[in-house]
Image (cartoon, rainbow, N blue to C red; front, side, top):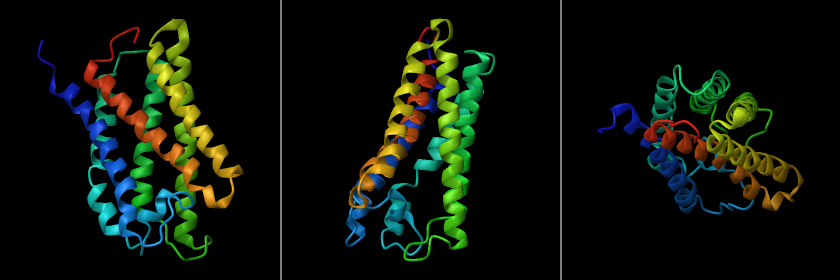
Length: 209
């Protein structure tokens, strides 16, 4: 049976992940002296960063494809799954919008005080993204493990949450020269889970998955 267009749009979640991965892996080449083990990913797209143009080129499909994919997921799951999982996915979609809009309005400014207004707002956006990410994943887990329905979706949410938590704890305890390593765990967990939801959309969110 031929798949509806909405299911095919789930593959945009994978394209979003590939675009982001390309930006993270390749953009440091345009940033002299950039140390990926020490510096955050956001430094690559910061205002005045020498790598900003290349980042914008490589990550051009990241937000666009990611947002289309997650919004199509929200449309498709109407009256499907269960209320708890739907709430978790809606919160995850909200996180994607806060990330896309918030970081666009308030990009990090490198080589300036962290108390610069724009940098403060950048940190505030990060806090909102983290809060929405964690809460959405926990809610999806609760809904997925309930009555052993949608176990694999709940398992993927668990993996994403664990990676995110490991990244958050790691950035707090590792020496400054290794900050960039655990930080990448956190940033890829959300983008990766968005791709997972896109795959589920492509597959039609079959029950007992």
